[in-house]
Length: 248
Image 1 (cartoon, rainbow, N blue to C red):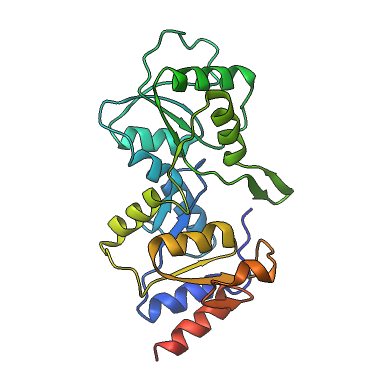
Image 2 (image 1 turned 45 degrees about the horizontal axis):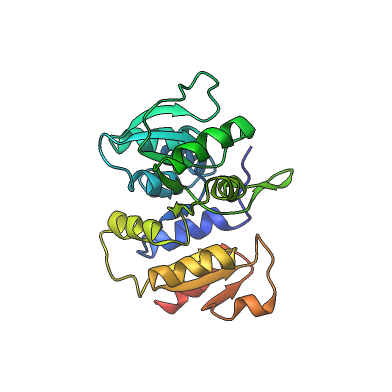
């Protein structure tokens, strides 16, 4: 059961009532954007059409008809289909033919990663397939604690293949391009990126050329990391208070 941080649901409501567009930008690539929107709906936040995921960003890098080998969850599968690309197999499929033609390899968080999959993924990259990663987050927070993230898997594939990937998610340009496209706005200098991870969310704000609001309800950081923060608060509710008062 997903539990919202106290005050966050009301904060989103208040921001929207004040006339602010709220977009949820996530490096979670396992679930589809629609599935993640339904999770938000379940805690009281309408979000259909307002979720932008790393899987969607990776899909935007694919070409129609491109043959794709992947490791990832339903979100990646959906993004490949939406792009008009052809899924030729998964890296955890023991029956995957050795001679299958692959134009692109998409690597994402998944729980079935093993040596055989690493061998298949890296081999096709060495043969010339484009290497796309949904994100390079080394860890992933869960209710039971931090676990290895998609970036840990991506690092293994990069080491084995000798090729660095195009990273689709935050804080990189492909995600910024997708956000601009969804919003229909090229200049985001008046926008705010709100997040708890300076290395990802703060850097993404720089990529977008927008303001960064750091909330301390998630990942902890040292003061040295917080130099480029335009707002600092305990949680999303404190940011909502700040931005609504600022525009009154």
